[in-house]
Length: 176
Image (cartoon, one colour):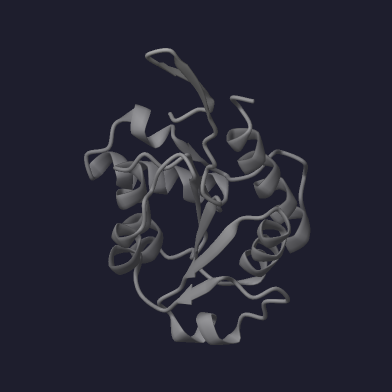
């Protein structure tokens, strides 16, 4: 990890300051929670990229704060074009294994800082089984925060988005 500090070269001491790029949040799937998550992420200075291949959801989800990008393609067509590193975060919430699992396969093979998956406990167990069958180890699967968000008994879309953002911020700030 790049950090600020001093560097001595011969008889000179240089102060180096590293400015990290803006954190990127990839949201796979557009719906009510996605829209609330975009709003909070924008407020917290994240670049927001919504990936939604289904036209109905992409065109009919009301975003009070527009995402920086809304891409109507499958995750496999989008994610490889971005650095999935310590400044990248992702939440999969399409509720369609064809979309969510495709994204998770790519995310689990990356160095992304955070992976969250919106689901019930039952859906999460089914997903874990599919990922195991696809060759992912228990250690790989444990990287996924699922069900996503802090356990604050969220009921509404804004509450769910707050619980997700709080969990991401905890991950982002774990070394501070």
